[in-house]
Length: 403
Image (tube, rainbow, N blue to C red; front, side, top):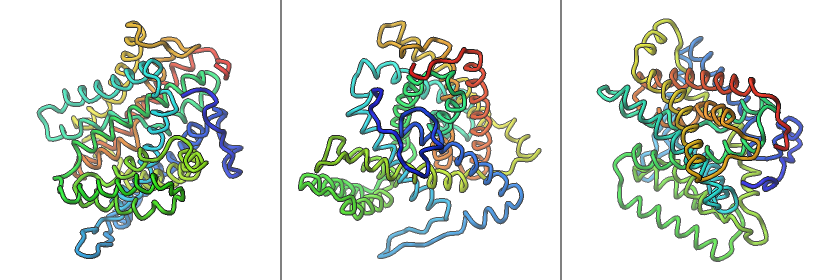
């Protein structure tokens, strides 16, 4: 991603509160960390003060099925399978932007963050598998792979001028590659038995989307019905329904279309809804676990919790830093100007903050009892990673923001 590639955020509601990264996507993500943290704390307080009320609200089923279609889901699942499609749509838009206009379009510039991301996905998964190899928690191997962009950029925002701006963009590129890996893992390993006819219907809907684009139909409203149809087809096919958001994001034109920059316009309108409404609702519906002496005791003895914490803290730090520094040593790429090895270790530790996608995968991987243990591991591992990353940067002198 090149400097100055994005416009600043101009919304009157949020503009004055945004961190001075000069980048709309990153700045909104950093600010949204506050809302996401508040939703997480609210979920934990709610579940621990009135667990029955929390369960009653989120486990209540809403049946919106019609014409024989099975759409009987709990409120939590409507958030996870329905609203989170918007979250993944924004992820798809950002992946498309990076591939066409950002760092990922240049193989040499992308090489280092890609290697860092790969190291930060493979090593946490291997550590988790090593700890859970002979137990029932093995299915959660992908939980510690994911980096939460909102919380990670939020931590860097709090550190201010001690973090060079180019390192923030390095983290963003790394996290986008991380998201690609998570999406592939979800699609392949965490989907149910595939129903071929529904999947074929989904392909047909995508063809309709491309057909509308070929006809130069530029109104977003024209794509709402195909988007809903694609979600329904994937939901019925056995492929996780949120993949519809990623597919639609990748189908969105990155170049000017009908005289308009479509991706920029959609991100500007939808991204705040995704991070200020959808992601906090997801946290509120999924982060509410009981934290008491008994649950903490079980977590301390659980390979699931230990594997998640070790994967996030140790696996991410060593994997990301090792991948980046090895790539530099081999001459595959160069670190951004003004960034040294200690900065890489700091950002690698911050990359161990896993939340939204980690919770999402945990929900797909585990039944309720082990899901709660995974949530405790995600929260603990993320807090430790944030503390380690902050400690590394606080030992460094302040950087000039232009760096």
